[in-house]
Each structure stands twice: as C-alpha cells, then as structure tokens.
Amino acid sequence: MKFKSTRDTSVNPTLVSAAYAIKTGLAPDGGLYIPESVPALTGADFDALIPMTYEERAAKILSLYLTDYTYDELYADACAAYAPEKFGEYAAPLRAMSDGVYSLELWHGPTCAFKDMALQIMPRLLSRALAKTGEKRTAHILVATSGDTGKAALEGYKDVDGVKISVFYPVDGVSMMQKRQMQTTGGNNTYVAAIRGNFDNAQTGVKEIFGSADLAQKADEAGFFFSSANSINWGRLVPQIVYYISAYCDLVKSGDIAFGDRINICVPTGNFGNIFAAYLAYEMGLPVNRFICASNQNDVLTQFMETGVYDRRREFHKTISPSMDILISSNLERLLSVLGGAEVTRDLMAQLKTDGIYQAPTGLTAKVKALFSGYSLNDCETKAEIASVYEKDGYLIDPHTAVATGAVKKYRAQTGDMTKTVTASTASPYKFAPAVAEALGMAEPDDIFDLLDQLAQKTGTSVPAPLAETRTLPVRFNDVYDPDEMPEAVFKA
Ligand SMILES: *Cc1c(COP(=O)(O)O)cnc(C)c1O
Image (cartoon, rainbow, N blue to C red; front, side):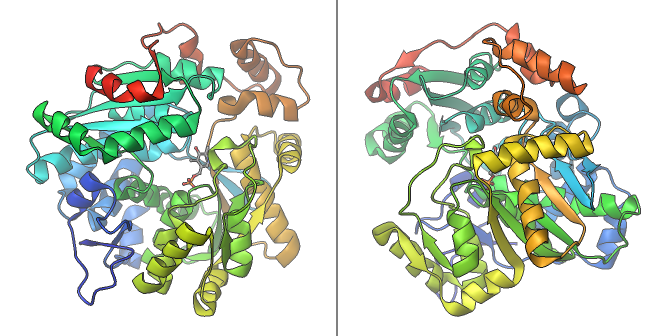
C-alpha cells in the first residue's frame, strides 16, 4: 500500500510508503497523503474481527494500510497504546442511549478526549518510521496548542524512543484545568512553556521555526529535526478508522444489529479528521447508510453539506465546544480528493486560499450529499441537549458529544430516518465541567476541583483519575516566553 498527495494531478502520481508519509506529515505540493486505493474488508474479515479484542482489531485494520510495518509491530504498538492502565478495560466502549442511538465513548484515555485514540499510537508508529526510513536524528515535535491537543500530544510522545516534544500554549488562553494538565506532565523528553500572547502568536512562532532554514541547520547539527503532531498527518488518521469498525463489530456481537444492517454515524466535527476516518471505514465495506456531520455555531461544514459552498469568510465564534471552533476544516480536502479527484481539489484549495470561498462542482456536491448531512447546534441548544440527555437517559455527556446527539435529533426530525446510529462521544463531561454544570443548573464554585467533585456527587459518576490527580501532581513547567524567544526555548528544551 502506497500513499499519494490529494493534489497530485499527474498520470502516475508520486507514491510514498506509510512510514515516509507518517514521518513527513504534509506532501511537498501542500496536499495531504491519502491511500492510493482503499483496502476492502470481506465478510470473512468481519467474521474474524468480531470475536477479537480491540488491540487485535486495531492491528488487523492498521496492517491493511501500513504494509511496511509487520503485524507483530502493529499489535505490540496497539497493546502498548490501548493498555488497560491507560484506557481501562476497553478502549472504545459503546453505551446504548434511547431510541437506537449508541454513544461510542472515545475518551477513556489519559487526557479524557478522543485525540488520545490516535495520539497514543501515532508516536509509536513515528518512532518505527524513523528506523524504517534510516533516520538517525531525533524528531523534535513542536506543538502550539489552545488546550486539548497539547496535553494529548504530551501524553502520547512522553518517553517514546527517538522523539522529544515541546508544547507552547498562550499564557492566558487555556482553561485552568488544561494548564494544570500540561504543567504536571511527566516524561524525560517533554517540555512545556507558556507564551505571552494569544494562540495565533504561539502558532505563528511554531510555524516560523518550521520555516527557518537556519534553525533547521542548527537543529541538524545538534542531532535533531523538527516535526509536527498535526491532525493532518496520516498517522493520526488511520487509528481512527479502527473504532468505527470495532463499534459495528460490537453491535453485531451484542445482537443489537445483524451483520449487514446499515447504521448511521454521527460525528461532532472540527477539522474533519474523525468523520473522514469513518468515511474510510465505509469505503472499506462498513455498512453505513448516512454520515451526520455535526457542528457548533461555527457551521461552515453545515453549509457545505447543504450547498457545496465552502465559505470561511464568516465570524469566528468562541463556543462551549471549543475543540470544534474552526473555520478551515483541513481534512475535508481528503474527501474532496477521493470523491472529486486531484485536479478539482487543487483548484478548490487554491480558491480557498485566495478568495476564502469555493463552490464544489455539481457532480462532486451531489456525491457528498448522497452520503453526508450537516446539522449545527448553537450553545443554547447544546446546553439544552446536555440537560435533556441527562434527564431522559441518566447519561452525562460533554458539549461536543451533545452537539452530535442534538444533530441526530434534528436529522431524524427532518428526514424520519430512524436507522440505528453510532454517535462519536469525543470528550469526558468532566473535561468541560463548567459548561456541563451550567447546563444542569448547578451553582459554580471558584475552584475547578470542587466543581468536579460536586458534579460527581450530583450525577453519581466519578471524576476520571487523570483529571483528579492533577490536583496533587507537582508543577514541572513554569517557563514563560515572549513569542520571539521561542527558538531559544526550543534549543534549551
Ligand atoms: C478535536 C476534537 C473534535 C473534532 O475532531 P476533528 O477530527 O477535528 O473533526 C471534536 N471533539 C473533541 C472533544 C475534540 O477534541
């Protein structure tokens, strides 16, 4: 299996190995790597997958894409990534809600959000990729974060061979819990610093380091090179295919569906990575009837699914589901390329860059609409959904998940399609405790840890250990830099 750029229009596209795609992240023409063809799962494959553990399913599915890795390597990495000490009994459990909706809980990992599902295994894949491509230098991962990605990346890259990681966050731009999670990170290859400025300042600082030939040379002399943990890396996408197939297997196993029954899949979407992974599962043979793309008030994708027009020239809204506050959904490019081809993709991406808007051709729009529906919820609707699900199902969900379950309701009301639906639940409610508590009408104490305890008491659930323990873990990282001091910080890290 080889990979090509979403924008490569040549008759014989340049093909690279999985290890190379994972090591380099972005293709040289600015496109994203996609598989040259999508491997098919047969009925016999599903029969084999159904009785397997999550780790075995992961190794089997990853081995279809990462053909330059052995099955044993992938199985060892999956076992290390999804170990019970990290994810509890089962990495991606399904919880039945009412009316044939199932919540696929993807937040049992070390940072209580779904990014752990990819970021726990991707660093191991990268570490192997370095060996497979003859790389002698250390990969120094640089991350600018507005909160969640930074901690998930730190936990994933912590103590992995051949890599080190530095994370920069805006000094006043992350929540108290997020800051504490990052500052207390362990590991002998991790570094965290605050930047005086906002997220854009931190992001620009990282991009300038990536773009500097001088710094690249200086790094080379010191025995390392800069790399990113960005969600457009193929190594972050491929592990996400696994849990959709796994969820289907679990529904068959439990007798909730018969093999071959089609399901709907709803994903709370920001950068379009998670839902694109679900789409790949469908292309591989997963019986899916429809994808519901759920957005918050930043509803650029909702409009795209309806009209084929992608228009980023709109107001940016800060919402209670901040991990979906996004105007450019980078991974949508992968869907455009698979459905519409490289030439169309290249043109549309150029238009987006220069004009901030594009209109997909009619044929491509029709293909998207045949499979995807987009719905959005504002913050008020999201809080009402959290309260309603808690009341009806006794189930506590976070604002991102609520955007998704609310979108399912809107879709069903509009279409009458009551197909059983798997909804991606992307964060623990405790990770976004202030918004959840407000939705339940609770008074908010000043101290975040008191709030977690009160939420646990009220709902009879428990505070996830990784969040609870940050209360007592020592703060390891207290550095604060100006943006122009970031290169210095990186070389000191
Ligand atoms: C990152 C994130 C999302 C969005 O996922 P994409 O793959 O970017 O679409 C949704 N919910 C949570 C909690 C996240 O952290």
